Image 1: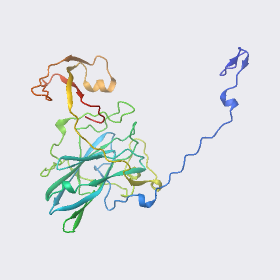
Image 2 (image 1 turned 60 degrees about the vertical axis):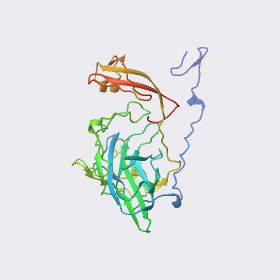
Image 3 (image 1 turned 180 degrees about the vertical axis):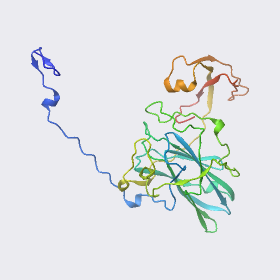
Image 4 (image 1 turned 90 degrees about the vertical axis):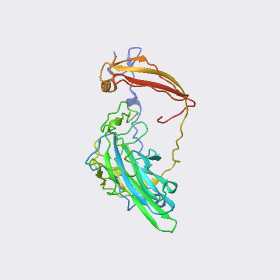
Length: 331
């Protein structure tokens, strides 16, 4: 005779389940989260957490922040801190400076150092910060709330100083070159990037740029500059979550900043023309079969390391290159 839900020995005796033979064991309690010593924490007041004026932010939204600065004399030092949720790219006068932050527990946000004296000659300058807010976690990034925090102290050769702080004096734009609310296509990646260059405000981070009416004064968030934006009262569209302020803080970045260098291209391996039978969006949304036809296409190479292919408005181009060394990141 068999007993439903259990195994049998020779078809006669019911075998006890694991739950019947082992006593219940309570899971271990998680270790309490404690603040690091005060000397190891950062408070960047009177800088303020800022964001695009809004009451919520959809996942994978990109916001541009712009601030003009006049430097009147020789700069001796220009040091400070920058943090953003989830990723930032800092430019000065259109030139890439640095990017980050390193992924971290959203209650223990790591803040990146700034050292910019060599970039601030006398004259007019423009600070630009591009911030991508993931809005949900993935294989390498925890969840969090949006925000930008910036604090820079400039000391001049004559001993005088001034500060540049994130506050409502910054201008901001919701950049629709990246569609706000872009869905995840895979559980390990929060964003597979689609960029519409027709909507990008080229020159926005250069001196002399005249912002249009789409640029708005930054919104100051309800969060002290000693805490991460996960502690703010700004709405979390995904989970309606908020970090516990009593165990949250800002700390200096614990690993070196990333560096960037160009990698030479060895050769163009293949080139294809792509004609879509179905809308391209449908393929990326649903992986529709036979959504496109790919055929080899000619590519001119007038000089070594240069390849030219022209689009006719009817087909796309898919190009694959081989680099001289293995690389990671975003080519």
